[in-house]
Length: 265
Image (cartoon, rainbow, N blue to C red; front, top):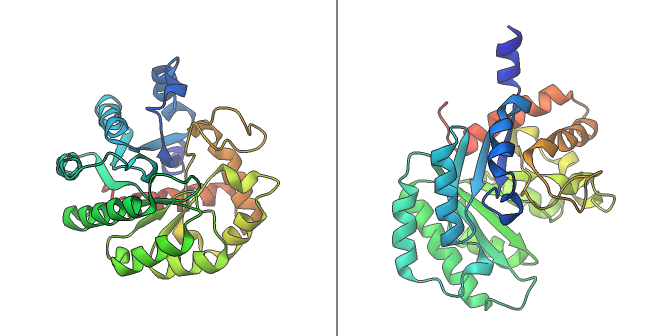
């Protein structure tokens, strides 16, 4: 019974980048050890054609790693329609569970915003065509992201707003569209008050846990390389805000992750 209980309450990391060079020195040792340390599943996220290829390799090597295929807005400058054709094939792989990381990022002045919007919409089209949910990246682009998603009826596909960074008002919009919100290390930051307000407001049934590793390590590891092993710190923060046990946080968010990515396990 203890083994069964442990399996049911292991954490799912819904957004990781283990293809990143930050893991070149110890990737296999780290990944191979995750299941024995409380991490049930990891979803690795493509951010370009090359990183999507690496993501697919990870899904083939590790039975507990699943993949998301797509091109991040910051990587859309040289994107061509042929890449959509390639992603369509990648989306048919048995362990591909979503299209992403797609969206808009206005933090930098490039790529040109119209280029970002075009490929965001094309990848939303791809998600509709393949019947997969979407993993949405939105930074400093709140209005345009929401306008495009409403215009493209993104709620039909469903998915997650990754690393949710806006306030309660926008959280309400996305929750009403049926989206999940990705919650990670930022929740533990001293300046994370806005996200804590969102977590307090949102229903647990729409929350999934994520690392975005190697980025966004929670306190007390902020500034260091992140990994799925740091998710218990996020669980602890959610537990305190919502007034439920850590076990409940893990159980609910893991069920949510399976539902969101339509994992029939």
